[in-house]
Length: 269
Ligand code: ATP
Image (cartoon, rainbow, N blue to C red):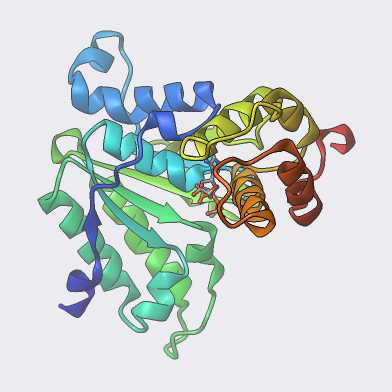
């Protein structure tokens, strides 16, 4: 059906090195997703089980999507991504079938990750289906039954992300479903320093640029904010001199004025 054709399979080419900081989260993802594929049997030897589903939660712009893509790439798994709410807007009236098609597609492209971004949006829609039922309930039931049907040999693992863990249907969190929860927090100063390094890979900086100081002054900035900061600093350098080859500290000062932090500073948390 049409829904099948629209689900693009992509092999994203971002790796662990593209994700600054978050060493613990990376390690947990490796254990949960990479190991079962790379070293089958290893978990069983120590009496552990591979999770069917891993839920990444934390504020927007802190690399949940990036991490999902990185683990897929590093473990050489195919990657099918869909946003919770998209199932409703794109596939009106056939949302459950779209879920079934998604899992069918994942099985045929295994080893494969299915990534549900904004999974809270999946249950969030409680619109009436005209027959006294709720579309959201049916979609959720379909997802639960697909997840319950996953077996190790199928080579499909489900990742999901949310900014609002409190809005995730608790049925999804039962054992055998999303039973691994990973918090992806805003970066601390050392994380921000590493993110700045990642973001500055292709940007020559002048000798006066002090990354440590920038990292300390960007409390509350997410990875996405730091990306914007570096972009603005580059533009400020070009604004000053269109033939500029370097970005200097005063360009970062200008960028700091333009790009505010999008999470509360940790001093106030
Ligand atoms: P949302 O909830 O809005 O989907 P998210 O947590 O999934 O947010 P991403 O989409 O992964 O966030 O991050 C947005 C962008 O911010 C990334 O494409 C990347 O450029 C940058 N970014 C965020 N965190 C990091 C990081 N730790 N290292 C490098 N870049 C980062």
